[in-house]
Image 1: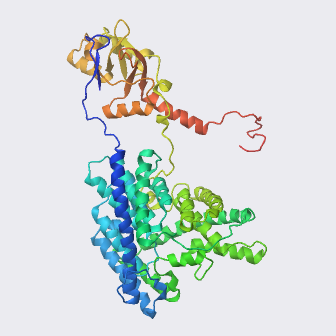
Image 2 (image 1 turned 120 degrees about the horizontal axis):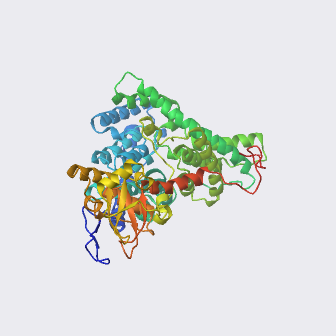
Image 3 (image 1 turned 45 degrees about the horizontal axis):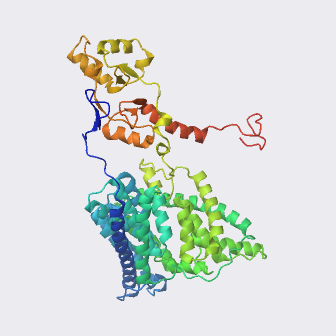
Length: 587
C-alpha cells in the first residue's frame, strides 16, 4: 500500500508500506517439475489400470490368472455371463456407499466439479478407489471406457500433489489438469488431445503458465505408454479413402446426424439416470440393477461386454458385427453403407465415416470439439482424416449448441444441481484496457483545508461536484495529492466533533493505494480487491503527488461495457438498410 505523508518532500513523500501479505505469484518452474512427476506417475497408473482391467476380465470370464488384455466377448460361460456383471455392480455399489460417492459418475464431470467448485481439491481415497472400481466394473463386463476413470484418477493425483505443497488454488488447478491430461495421453497414446482436453474442460484458459506444465506432463505420460505398451496408435487401421472433395455433401449430412445423435445420446443418458432415481432401492443397488440388464444383453450379444476397444477397432477397419452398441462409430459406418447401397457410385469408406462420426458425436456432446478432432486423428495417425473431421465436428457442435445451449453431457449433472458451468472462454477484457482509457479526468477533489461540516453541507445540497462520489481526493493549495476522504471518514469525524470543524485532511486517510495511467485495468482492479477499496487515485509514475485521474468501480465496469457494446451493438455497414433488413435480406 502506498502512504502519502504531506510533511515529506515532493520527491520522497511516497513510500510503500505493506499492511497485508504480498500476492503470491504463479511458480511456473516449480509446477513444471511437479508436472513431470505427475506425468510419470499418471503414465504408470494408466498402465496399471489397463492391466487391472485385464486381470479382472481374465478372472471373471476365463477363470485364469493373467493381466493380458482379453475381450470378454470370447467367454464360454453360457447363461452365467448374466451373473458376472451383477457381481461387479454389487462390489462397486458397496465401494460407492462405504468408500466415497465420488467414484460414481463418468469421471470428467467430477473432475470439472472439483476445479470449479472445490478449489481443485480431491480426496485421497478417490485416487485409490476410482481406478479399482473402474477396473472391477469394466473387468466384469461393464461397457465403459477407461478414459473417464483414468482422467479423474490422474486429476486426483495432480490435486494431491498440489495439496501436499503450499499452492494457490490456480496452481492446484493446473496440477489437477496436468494429471488429467497425462491420464488421457497415457491411456490412448494421444498427447496433443490430452493437452487440449485439459484446456477445454478443466482449465478454461490458454496461457503459457499452464500450457507448459500440461505439455510436460502429457509428453512424459505418453513416453511411459510407449515404453510399456508400444509405439503404435491406439487402433490399427488400414488405409482409408476419406473421399475429399467428392464426399463433402455426405459429410455435411453426417454432421447434421451427428449433432442430433449427440443431443439424443446426452438426453437419453440422463433420462436413464432419472429412472434410477425413481427406484425404491438404496443407491448401493443401482449398479447391480443396471448390470443385470447388461448381462442379459451380453448373453445374446457378447460384444457389448467390456471396454469395447476391440469392437471400435473392428468398426474402423470396416467390420460392423455389433453396430448398434458401439453406436457413434457404428452410426458413421452404417451411414456410409446405406449411402453406398442407394448411391452405388458414391464409393464411401465405412471405416472413414465411422472415425469421423466417432470424433464428431463425442466432441459435440461434450462441447470439446477441438479435443476430439485431434483425438480421432491421433488414435489412427491418418492425416487425411483431418478435413472431414473438422467439417463434420463443427456442424455437429453447432447443432448441439442450438438444441442444448446451456449444458453438455459433461455439465448437465452439475447444471441440475444449480451449478452453472461457463465453458466458453476468452481474454479478460480488463487485461486489454489501460487505466488511462477508463479513468475519470475530471477529479472529484476538495481542498485540504475544507472542513467536514462544509463538505457534508455540499453533499446534502446534492452538489454534483461532490455528491456522486463515495470518496473524494484531497489536494493541497498547489493541487498536489495529499489524501482521500470517504463518507465513512466523514461520519467518524462528526462522531468525534459534531460541529464539523475538523478539516478533511485531518479526517481523511493518507494511506493511499494508487494506480498509474499505463497500468492495465485488471492490475488496478486487483489492487482494489487486495486492499478492499473501491477507488484509486491515478498518479504520475515519476511524481506520486501529481494526480492525473480517478478510477472507481464504474471505471472498471466501463471496460466491460465496451466489450458488451462490441458484441451486441451493430454498426452501420456499407449497404443501406431497408425496413430492418440489409440488401442481403438478413437482420
